[in-house]
Structure formats: C-alpha cells, structure tokens
Image (tube, rainbow over all chains, first blue to last red; front, side):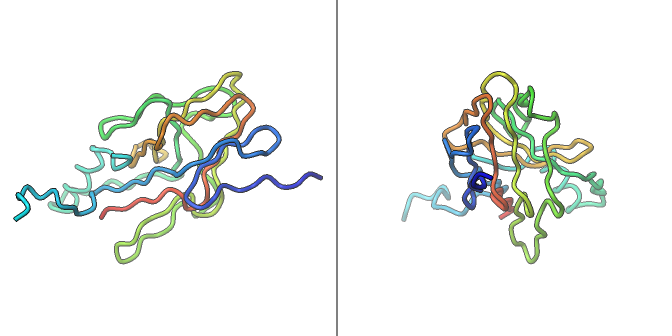
Length: 46
Length: 137
C-alpha cells in the first residue's frame, strides 16, 4: 500500500494530483455577515 | 467582501427576529456547492459541472455543522473533509462556494481569495474539517 494522501491543513483547501501530491492550497473563504468594526465611521479623525 | 450571507436569508432573519414572521425550517442535508462564477449576495455563480461533481453540492459525515453557542461561530464540514475528484475531462475553475439546504435554499457564500482555483482533470479538490467559518458578528 502507498502512503495515505495528506489531509488539507486547518482552514485550507488543497488540490492533489492523481498521485496524492499537493499541487496547490490556500485559505477557505470565511462567511461573516457583519463586518468587523473599523474606523470607517464617517468622522474626520478628530 | 470575501463571503457573507444571501440577501434573501438576511431578510428572513430580520423579519423573523423583528416581527411575528415565522422562519421556515430549512431541510437537511446541507451541502457545499462549488461555483465557477462569482457569488454575490443576490445570487450564486454558475455551478461546477461534469464527471466527479454531483449537481447541488456535497455533504459529509454528520454532524455537518458545529453548533453555535453564546454567539460563537459555526464551522463546516465539522466531521469529515469534503473531496471532489475531477473526472470531467477538462479543468474546473472554482471561483466560489455556497452553503445550500436540501430545499434548496442558499444561505451563505464565499469567494476564494486569488480565485479561481484550478483543478485539472484527474486532480482532487478538498476542504479541511472546520475550514469554513460562519459568523454573524
């Protein structure tokens, strides 16, 4: 038996080739309904 | 915005939590759908097609989603990875993903950073356990 294919890293997607080699990977998009609070409050910075 | 909630679902949540409008229960299983087009709040992009991809998306071992408590995030897939092996004869171009109930109702969506993700014929696309994080705040 060959070695088991690697599992994707936490929080990530991955693409494996037919031999089970990771050819690409990256972060999975997060789904947030309400944007994090920032400084875009319409004030002029005073 | 990388990802958020379907605008029809926004209205259902708002109406159900501000008046006596009942929130109609959605039907399991919930599935993750892959799209070749960009998802927006208004609509999903065109769904991936071809061998190795079942229309409507894929679920995995239950429980598919974690349970929110005290406002915490929900994560999907909660128990087993999602995996698709492209047998379409051509490359898949994965732009975005949607969470869809069995009805089907689209609830949440997200576009991949640096999209599209190219999945050549014969290659396998996988999403890690708890990789999709869904939050309301």
